[in-house]
Amino acid sequence: MEFAYTRSTGPVVGAFLTGLRGQKVLGYKASDGSVVCPPPEFDAANNAPVIAGELIEVGPEGVVTSWSWNPLPRPGNPFDRPFAWALVKLDGATSSMLHALDAPRDGITTGMRVKVRWADERVGFINDIACFEPAGG
Image (tube, rainbow, N blue to C red; front, side, top):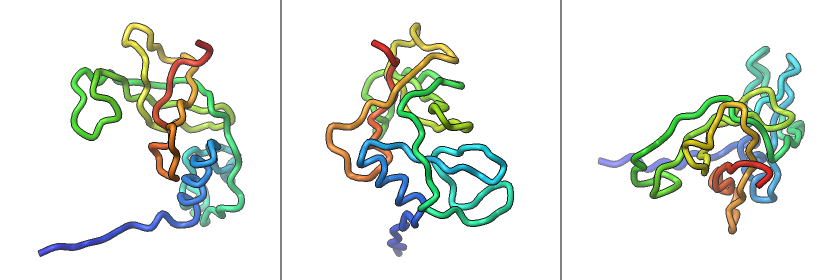
């Protein structure tokens, strides 16, 4: 027995992914003033649907708010060598997004500045952000 199902991204996630394809990271300014990135389908403060046309661009750089070292990558991970998973709060956002961080373990600190490393070929998928890497060098 099989249940073949493909989830559609919907207008908000679709707009976020389209932005990534164009090397733009989009967030949502919620009713409480916070900027959520990636944008949700519904505003958490009032449960109103988010309107894709109301998304705003946030910066491609930000700070690491938390991280965890992955010494033994598994199939499907972004790297076949040790790397970190990091929560990154992009400039202009008040929430953090989870993604891979490519940096040596002894060079990672909470609060460090990082930037998006874009994939060479972008197709409108979260992997259009290949990873984050230390900013400024």
